[in-house]
Amino acid sequence: MSPRPGERLEGLLGVIKPPGMTSHDVVNVARRVLATRRIGHAGTLDPLAAGVLPILVGSATRLAAVLLALPKTYRAELLFGVSSDTGDLAGQLTSGPVPDLEAGAVRAAVARLAGRRVQAPPAYSARQVGGRRLYALARAGELSLEHLAAGSREITIFGAELLSLYPTAHGRYAGYPAAAITVACSSGTYVRQLAEEVGRDLGTTACLSFLVRTVSANLTLGDCVTLEQLQAAGNGSSRARCSLAWHTPAEAVAFLPGAVLDSADADRVMHGVSIPAAPGLRALPAEGGPVAAAGITGMSPNGGMVRLLGEDGALVALARLEGQALRPLKVFAGGEEGRRHGR
Image 1 (cartoon, rainbow, N blue to C red):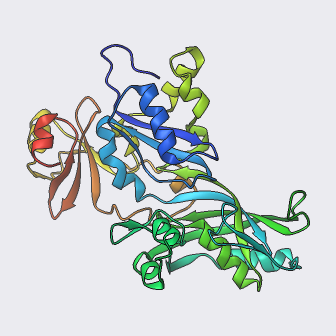
Image 2: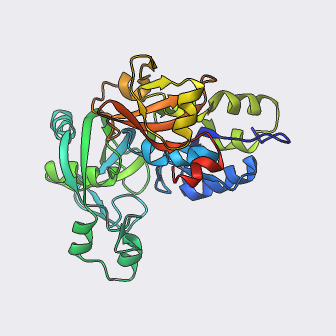
């Protein structure tokens, strides 16, 4: 999907991040392939993790906060009897006796993850406290409990389920029990911390040995392209696959309710002017996508936000319903005019 001469790329593309790369590495590949500097992602994945990495291009980069607020789902493997200073296999590992675990007990402990709680971040994480990354503080020997408390966030685990419990078949920890689980959670959740929590609940230790993000920004793995397909996007079938996986800014926020504006209202909104939420507006229902299909309710803190489309179907603005008026929050049509209004 490399741009043709005169082509302007604006939208969302899901890429399957492979393990061993940072999210920023993947963005750099996309930046070269798509020949644009205005590009970013909506949700970091740890280097060892794989899965859905939403790439935003052009004006769609301004949708990052809205897409980040959506729930995510993961498939993870927990390794029991082993602890790590990073919470995963990237850290310093310490093993104890091989724990004797029953599937029923593990299933119950995993299910008990569901609900709201305040979660402290891992010591080795990219969360910022006082302008510094926690991993930088940890490496400098300056990390304190106060830093971790300041980096804590309220999260929601919508559901967690044990898929299977089995002995690790090979490697240094052959014979140690491992569990494959699925987790649906709010943004900002560290699955590494959940792994450790399950271990404590079962009276042992645990760390994360494998993680794949299966849904992010309302994209599934099936909606994404591989890094190889992205790199070959200028050629035949790879370009066609990338084109199929491409989402316009309007499609990227189709999970929000919306309305179609006539040209007069669209012009007012593009100038940052609120418009009446009159009965004459052509309403658009929210398209739930995989998040809704998974039965996750209370999808995001984007309550009251609506998408406003022009008659051509392009995204004009994101707005918030305030009383009987729609107040523009981010304007996407009107080019420099929208930017001058700070939208």
